[in-house]
Image (cartoon, rainbow, N blue to C red; front, side, top):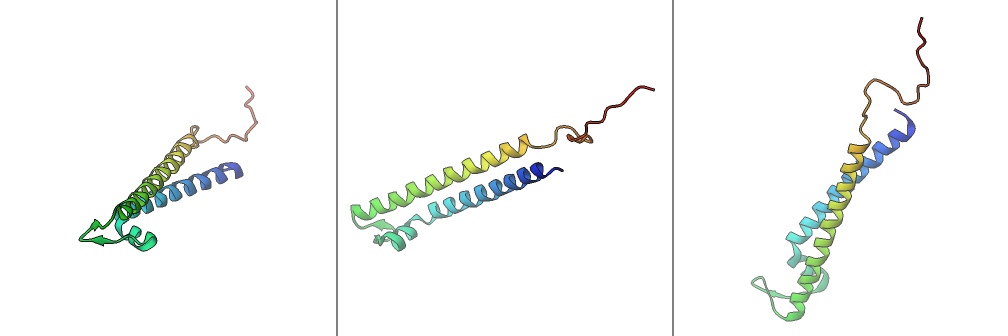
Length: 105
């Protein structure tokens, strides 16, 4: 495998890992959005219901941020998958750097 093919394979793996982690973090944030709103934005809840409209807006802001993170992760993951499929070897058993030709005898 040439040096450029090796670096492309490594960058594809990085895209897949980063996209997966970003998507998982966005899903976790979406699932715990009330906790994040409480911790980071000081929202107040009574039995899971926001006390004021400002607290509800804080939850909406966390929800929007987590959805953006999920979409960003899915986009990165999709790019990694597409690049992996395009860079897969199409010719098995032949090297691309070979310039030798056969001569008839």
